[in-house]
Amino acid sequence: MSKLKLNIVIIGAGNVAWHLAKELQKKEQKIIQVYNRSVEPAISLSQHLNCDFTTRIEDINENADLYILTVKDSVIEEVSELIKIKNKLIVHTSGAVEQNVIKHKRRGVFYPLQTFSKEKKLNFKHIPFCIEASTSEDYSTLMRLATLLSPMVYNIDSNQRKVLHVAAVFACNFTNYMYMISDEILSDKNIPLDILYPLIKETATKISKHKPKDVQTGPAVRKDQSVIEDHLNYLKKGINYDIYKLLSKNIIDKNKDEL
Amino acid sequence: MSKLKLNIVIIGAGNVAWHLAKELQKKEQKIIQVYNRSVEPAISLSQHLNCDFTTRIEDINENADLYILTVKDSVIEEVSELIKIKNKLIVHTSGAVEQNVIKHKRRGVFYPLQTFSKEKKLNFKHIPFCIEASTSEDYSTLMRLATLLSPMVYNIDSNQRKVLHVAAVFACNFTNYMYMISDEILSDKNIPLDILYPLIKETATKISKHKPKDVQTGPAVRKDQSVIEDHLNYLKKGINYDIYKLLSKNIIDKNKDEL
Image (cartoon, rainbow over all chains, first blue to last red; front, side, top):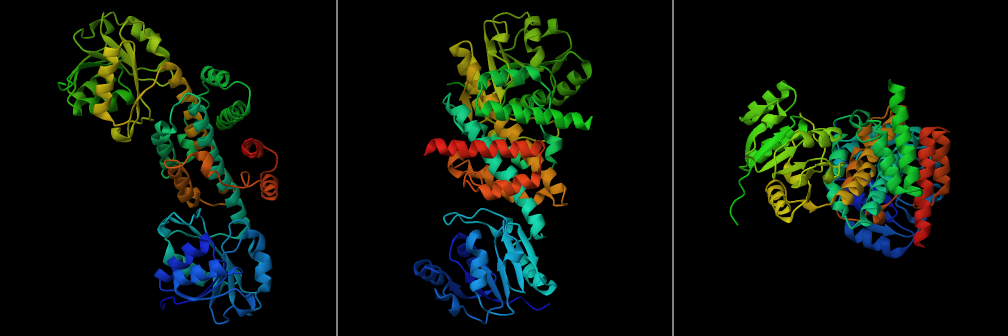
């Protein structure tokens, strides 16, 4: 198979655009233009990439192979409708938006499953890509492109991507909230959260090799009611009390189901 | 200060005993005896350490500087009462048990804050030690001993250790439960949890440099009610629905408090 050499237009100039476009250049793909509604981010990114830019959607270069929308979720549909170019592959990079909000025949999703901040360098090799496209030929192009960036490329349709988003809320957002409660509880007694960091890291590392169900530890899974009562008394009534109670009850109940 | 050279008796022959005793030997401390009620684990550990053993509590060597109880939480008090040796430092290694269940004048706690499994090698340099003792001289001895094993040594009294335990339930046990729910949600659609692993790792890594409160992300902290509703509809009524609802509500409420 010949080497992949795409001409690409980047739509939007935010964090995803900055990281993704630069990485695509490193992998010898050609960014021929940046479009952004406001001029300063457009200039700044186009200088970073050493390519053309425009702030007029009707001036978007028609000769690209691929148009990557990196704009906010809420305007993907609107922006894609304003692009009048025909018969070209247009993709978005969002985890939460369905493929078919893009009103073009050749459409797809090229979703890097990671949080992007401008300051923080990311190693693309550790970013899973979720790929979807309306035609098998375009799917195969996106697959080849993603594989240049990362060994973790997944075929994920819009329904699965929604499920992934729900699961990520538990595994990431709610997990961070557990860390936050932990920090609150410790701060009360002037204990730094650092002391728990090795255990937090071990907890996260363990599940790369074991199913979370098989490595659940703590008073609830041991059904140690005296420790649970003791902890609830310590927390007193309140937000964290309610969470401790509900999660412990559910861990106990789920283990009952297994017996 | 002269080099620390302690004669130590290990009480119990479980996971903590195996890991800790071997590491103490590596740091040139002398394990002079292993006591364990049942004979096979006693023999097995004493061979591993190349030292004496006994299964009779009245035969415990009286000439040690330090007696380390690694027995189960529920029998620490009972075993410590059966040790009739006078005026020696006796410590336990538990996170959940108060120092004063040891009915000896010279008592303390030497608590490695990590989960131990026999199979898995642990790097002691990454294990925080929580130290407590009834006299300042013994405290200083335990501090020196812990410092041989790890750079992370904390002065934690029994009240603080209890708080630490509550906080660890959130940061570790409940976090693992979030991973478990996530795995359940993905399994339903035949998506492997692996796909979320880079995000899980990033979430855990981030808090080594930032306060969890400052890096909370997701629909709840953005007050994105339409995504929250969408996710709740997906989960339908049930255990995971209740958890999603409670945690999202609390994240939203806590952010209101800040305004």
